[in-house]
Image (cartoon, rainbow, N blue to C red; front, side):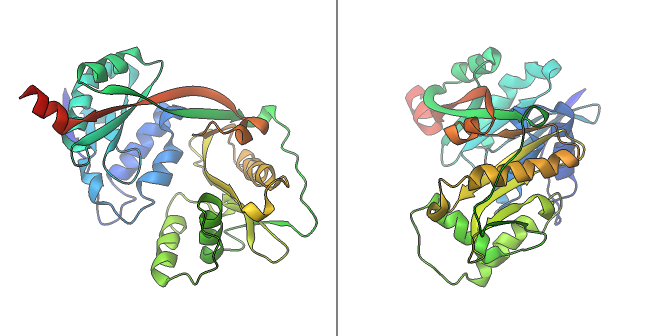
Length: 302
């Protein structure tokens, strides 16, 4: 018999339902819904209020389907169900509309080859957008992970050289236009500590390349679990000052090499930028965001 309940998180976020969903994703071994993404995104934020809106479906006490957000906030949705339980899709779409929206707006990420899922969201009034996510994969054994570093640059890890200040600096410089030097408040250091110093994060695999002044010049985060042969890469960044020197390739290859020694056979990254294709990743599948303004549809039908 199938029954449903909402996600419950204990005071320790990394117990209970967190582990239940984690084991479910490991069992599925589907790169579109990788366990690494779950580990990275779902509990990487201090805001956990949205977790109670996740939906869980069970059959005979076995988890068979999950509805959760794409990131650490409401407004986006991912619906994951076992292949032999796909009759639940319409019910899951309905649940997402009621519980995963943000102020009446919701986007669902639907694999482009999943016609049944596409039909369900279209029937529910969602509209196809031009926003797509590409899932790219590298088979580690089929690629030579050779790299070289410029003189004065060195490989380190967050295990050997944990530095929240340098991590924040390279993230900010690599992903924003902010190049200013700043003193990092203790609250931001605590948030970074929460991201790294928690279960299922192997600091030996969080790799940085240091510049001659010991600042982080490149960084690669990776999410590895011994129960899964696939790792998830997130994030990869190079300081703009040091781009075009092969540091991005080097930091990714070093990370993949370390994962391979632990049994990983492939890696997934949710990106289609040319950099990844240049170093051996290949597009595996695409998914498209379908959007719906729930209030608009409700008003138009009333």
